[in-house]
Length: 611
Image (cartoon, helix red, strand yellow):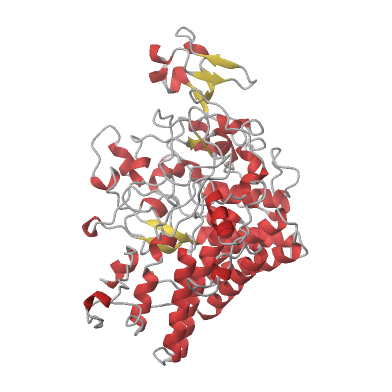
């Protein structure tokens, strides 16, 4: 049963209640803050309460926050019919919460203005210290659990800083009477992230390598997340703040944390790509460092697979810009590939010529269920899609899906590592070597293929060679070729996962979200309607169905020009999102919160650009 507690991330709610109404006699059965902190097993149970907030997986039931596909859809990779969803245009009336629910802000992919989890991690750390002083914990146990508490605090602050930038830093539980702390202004992000850095260094030095069940938080799991957050902050410092010293500090920790996992010998690329997301049991998958398990018998299910089953609609859906980014199997961008039909951007040709992750991520024909006609079926196994047009078993329909999710996997760690090394090389660090590429990008490309992909003629992508890194004609001139290709690898690897919006934010490339500057985000793939999709050459689509020719000419279906309906599909009623500025890199706080500070005689500073 212990295994299911951790794998299903059952949240702990402690009933720390008052005894006053019971004649001030201490309860013998209800846990409260006075009698809970008595054993290491209770610490583990309390730590489990963090899991549903930080290791969300596919979320649960109809939940979408921090969930792939259903939550992470706001980026330059995805497009809807109609007007594109936009960024905030003004500071909200209020933006605050004290809930421990894993709620977030969709267009920032992070938490709202909420210090509940900061307080919880600080309380955890302080109670561990008290238990240590009382000799309840050994020195080793004290260091491990302190590392766990500090890791969660660093995790929360990393997310808060990614959303708001400057944020109040608290390293202790603040009492109701400490108004100067409760109402202090925002601390500089450098102060906060230096404290996070210290938390992560402590976690790497003191967290247990194994805490029994491999699904309990351990040093390898923590290191994977540390590589993620330190990569984010290091590149933010480089591209937004031009602070080379800080950038190097954080990137070096990102690289060392990732290398700790990669050199452990415990993880390897032995899984085909699709099995990482569609499997009902990830326990034996050597690429998976931590996963969330689902079990219908225990009432823990999700709905993400059902939105990958070809029947449920996808809006937003993958766009032409994303499709174009996939490398060809000879290791070159499509513009310079020597593969036959590499320059053709219809789905069938791309399945035949692109990196295997294209076939594993998308359905191999246009689908009306997608707003762009390119449908992502990444988060369901190969069997689930065969029920299209039939009734779906529970594991593939509604909110009763039970495939597991790789919360942290080796591919992310390897890509965090190689990017951190490449960035450090631009700041005086050692240059990236062929051995580095072989250990990261090329190891990922060498994943095994499943039977379905092999039957379609899919083959592995050629290794990247440091002596001949592709020179993509579409590369931004301010990005070195190697870093550009590392970024491409991330884009192919993490479609609809947690990374894309955060990546373009930390690289200072939010302009990719503008259709005016990046017109391919407003298009679907090339479709030959008379051959591939005659279902839409019907009266109902007259004056609605449109394609764009290679020369930019737009053709609208009239009912009598079916033969001419060949080109890039234009989603119905498509229009660009509203104009935005660089202020959208960081979120504003609520005007109500600013007023509350003023009412107490304190000042709360608004996020720059949002006054």
